[in-house]
Amino acid sequence: MSKKLYIETLGCAMNERDSDHIIAELSDKEGYGLTNNPKEADLILINTCSVREKPEKKLFSEIGQYAKIKKHDAKIGVCGCTASHLGDEILKKTKAVNFVLGARNVSKISQIIHKDRVAWVDIDYDDSAYVFSQGNISNVRGFVNISIGCDKKCSYCIVPKTRGKEISIPADLIINEVKRLVDNGVKEVLLLGQNVNSYGKNFSTIHRAINFTQLLSEISNINGLHRIRFTSPHPLHMDDEFILEFANNKKICKSIHMPLQSGSTKILRDMRRGYTKEWFLNRAEKMKSLIPQLTIGTDIIVGFPGESEEDFLDTLDVLEKVSFDTMYSFIYSTRPHTEAKELLESGKIELVDEDIAKNRLARLQDRHKELLGITNQAQLGQIHEILFESYKEGMLEGRSDTNKLVRVSGDESLVGSICNARISEVRGAQLFGELV
Ligand code: 5AD
Ligand code: SF4
Image 1 (cartoon, helix red, strand yellow):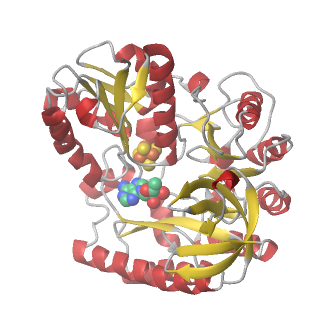
Image 2 (tube, protein in one colour):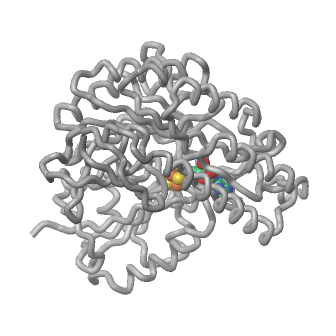
Image 3 (cartoon, protein in one colour):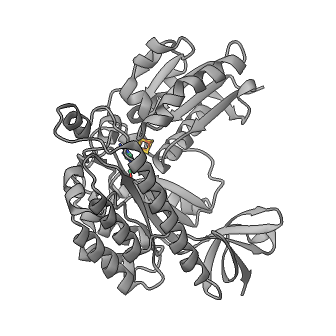
């Protein structure tokens, strides 16, 4: 009987990929198989997110729950971003945890599971040689890290502290990894990095000069690869060269994540985002003019310290003008190791009243929902290329080039194929189509 691993993954795509890597390592080197029942696991891992305070607070009650139901000799490990910044505080706070492994140290997983009561959270550790998951490829989509860490200094964000300095993975390694995935049946790759379009600044080994736009172009030359997506680009680095490649390269999916954070130039300055409201609008409008079917996703923070009603109206104004497809929106949460926290503590900036922040979030989300209803209705009758990823309850499910989730009736054997479908029904956010 093989040992069983239960893993809970919180947060972003980067964490999902790290979890994939952990699963592959523990399967290859330690003989673990996955279980989705923590009660029967020999090892329970929580891959944590630290971007906001609330999920982080829940971590300890969750550890308590696992400790209660786990097999008596099962181990519990905390990995990821909260592991990075709390480190051995986690061990001090609870006896239930056997080890703590930071987000920059994923590759050490098969060593640390044999230790007890240790925390390995070095953020300068170079994990870049281990960024590709070696596991079985069972999906039509593959995740490929192109960089690790983040060199930005957004004043609200803890990530540079948890994931460390930015390192780009040599392009030749990335290309080989994409080829390996394609040889194993992958049709679409998702390139990952905290700031994908600052790619190329600091390579993990000596390497030829290449920027993100050139990387996209080289990857698109790989035979058998059909689709390229990436996340997240930074609006500041969306130069014309990038926009033209994005618009003209047929393999690049016409959907982009553009994290706005705020529509107010004053707040953007305080957040240290490096761009203005006008720059953001100009980039979005330029892309939309070149690619009429483009969908744009975003992240927005409301209630950043000092945000006035007028600042918030600027955010609503950008929402109105860009009409984002997916929108992840959050109330500002004060995080340790950030500039905004320091400024708050020294009294240089002030928190926004909680009720006001909640009200703004609700107004933003309501308006987004209304706008999305209108844009989704406009999908009726449109034909999209869908890559079918799964078959559930008698329906094929997949994503359009523009990243819309579409369900279509058809044969299960079409999973893994790209087919044209006409959108025939819109039910809220759900799109249904028919093969054409
Ligand atoms: N408070 C609220 N939201 C935050 N994010 C990052 N840091 C914070 C914070 N301190 C959001 C940003 C980012 C997304 C991943 O999480 O919008 O793009
Ligand atoms: Fe991902 Fe950021 Fe959460 Fe870390 S803190 S898991 S990088 S979203």
